[in-house]
Amino acid sequence: IKGVDMPIIIVGSGYGGAVAALRLCQAGKKVVMLEMGMNWGKSGLPYSSLLKPEKSAAWLKTKTIAPFFNIFSIKPFTGVLDRLDFEHINIWVGRGVGGGSLVNGGMAVTPKKDYFKEVFPNLDTEKFYSVYFPKARQELKVNIVREEFLNECPYYKFNKVGEEEAHKAGFKTMRVPNVYDFSYMEKEYKNEVPRSALNNEVIYGNNYGKNSLDKTYLQKALETGNLEILDLHAVDDIKLNEDASYTLNVRQINTSGKTVSEKTFRCQKLILAAGTMGTLQILLKSNAVNNFPVNENIGKNWGNNGNFMTGRNWVRPLTGGTGVKQSTIPVGGVDNWDDPEHPFFAEIAPLPMGMDVATALYLQINKVDKKGSVSYSNGKLNLDWNESHTQKMKENVDFFIKKMNKANGGTRAHFLFKDGFGANICYHPLGGCVLGEATSEFGKLKNHQNLFVLDGSLIPGTIGVNPFVTIVAITEYCIENLIKQNEFA
Ligand code: FAD
Image (cartoon, rainbow, N blue to C red; front, side):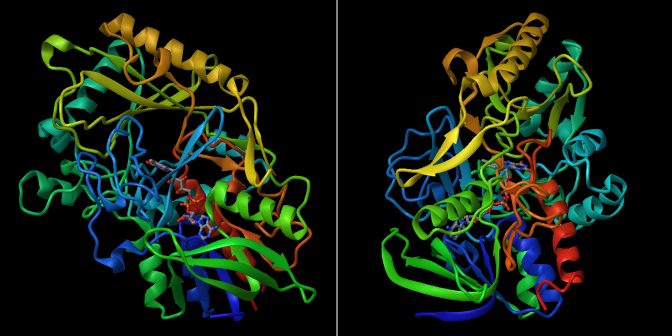
């Protein structure tokens, strides 16, 4: 196709894109979604397990890229997991119809009300907690594991040990909701259905059990008959036309990443939902190559959501550590947010390596005291982000690990990270196109009439918990108001 005219185009099929698509389709609008990754549901190809990485394991790489599992050679294929490498930080992202929902741990956490208020002082906090967050949780099919199941299931020994040790060290823990269907998991455990979370599937996709976006928002949007999803369509750059419409330069690729066709699309209304890094790449690259107008706030106020991985070795080696069998779906966290000196939240993460590595793994989420910024030069994105940005997070990790080890024994996980500190591991890139700064109060890009940004880049670098529930709530809020204001009439 050359020069196709579309009314509304959404770039990216992750959380922001899926929510926007559903609400626009329900309002009777025809929407075309361009997604660079593959439509796995349609392809019929299976997702691979962590222990046997195949096609879905990585986005066009010759080696697997999951943290701690990067030892396998693979054939380049348009898999679901990608990693963007910068000097001081590696950022993992999902690719495919469903975006990050295909690869993530499904942890569906609503932020602390006070912190949400601090991060978004101009939003109506009460309305978010009475309307948009409940709506997000309902559409995403968020549920909570049964305590009886947790206690009896050996696959959650890692969580039990993690919680007991945290309590012994004087920390509070919390139960973490998830979009993985725990009633399905209970059937897995009884061998009544095929196994997924109990069969090492998660970061390369789940064949069963997980309510990823293709099973929730996107499915509902497709059922309206108003949504068309074009997968394996990568947007390279965009142009602003004189009549305030947009032209998109798009490459259609095959599953080896080869370009099979170069296309241009034109649209009246454009929604960028390519994820924090994807949206920034499109805007900043287009500015560099096409003189695309951007405002001075684009690229500013970026953060890693305080992500900092850490671990402890030889946890209770005599009593059997955390176990060989581990569910891939996290259900617990250490909640130290109320400590004024060391506020953090730490996910008790599984490490399903197929053997007992006697290692406790944690993904800590901290405040971001010093924000970074993103720019574009020499044909690529650059991140102003270094050790100074993660210094306070490192102090929190040090505090946490020392206290845990003192109470329970153990050493820093030198085996997994240099010195036991994984400052460079980021799953939650946020910001760079912040709501009310780079955009209007509802996500319309400043200095533009017909361009909207709806994804993680709206959140100013931090939200204190895993971010997708917040991305969904903010998008619900923005798209509801944009439709009300007749922006898509
Ligand atoms: P994304 O979900 O990233 O979607 C963007 C989409 O746009 C992608 O499909 C991408 O392929 C596509 N795209 C990008 N550029 C282009 C282009 N140029 N042309 C066409 N398409 C493009 N969060 C939680 O809340 N809980 C968790 O448990 C959790 N675990 C995680 C585990 C891992 C391993 C990872 C990587 C992330 C995890 N996250 C988790 C984070 C969460 O997945 C992301 O915050 C979320 O997916 C971001 O949503 P988004 O709408 O901003 O964009």
